[in-house]
Image (tube, rainbow, N blue to C red; front, side, top):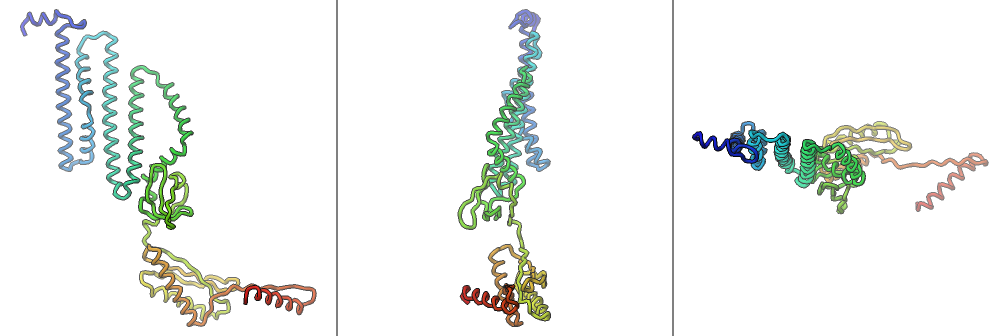
Length: 380
């Protein structure tokens, strides 16, 4: 550029500034835009190559997807701001340029954060969705919505504060309003957070057989507010998630075997040698049953009119019907052995003693009369 043209650029004024400075600012803005665009492409390609090679695949994938969320509009705004920084602007415009820089950076950070939240939630959905897709989908949607709302609310408040807005009173009013809303919908919010707790802690999943209170059945769906259980009797039971977590939950999904404890009683007049023989016989009966581990069989205590036994064994199968078949087989075997040993099962006996003024003979007669009357009423 020759001297007359350079003098002309310096001599002409555009918007209160020389044409040379405006041209220089425009060139700087274009160069900045091209540079930032090339850097973005290089970083995205570099992260994609690391992801394909498997080196730091998780971090590379996250960075690549975050960079893909970069706004070209905000890049253009940043380039324009770089150009404006080279101009001799009035003092009041310097503050405006600084605010625009903060707006651009905050908005871009918000976009990157939203992308990161989306990637994290999607990874959670893929990692946990195979076992309970419905439950994970609901919890992932809730977590994504909550985290994105928190992120953009923070960005918006930061921008307002940078613009000079007094957000203290605004935050206080939001807090009061939030408390009022929370009190109005506390049950719904409680169920929402309970749904998140179920998704994260996983006390049960879809398809598990659980027992909660007087409800026993298979979990069909875990929703945002309620959980649906198909009861053994056939009907569907809908339980609020908060109420569900307040109770003790018996989950049989991980159950691989059952420990069974049962008792029976024999007549109190049974001789000691036969009592010992009964204990040995019970052990032999249980050891002969397939997929059962015998633990113990003991003459435990003296009842009011019986000798009480306690038996413990383990069924190496979680199926309830199989356990009942085994218990029936054991019960039948015990009956056969008791008959072979000539041992009677205990029968409850009630003794009535009547005291009267007529002496012992009259008392015995009255007792016999009461016994006869009771036998007649019982149909004996």
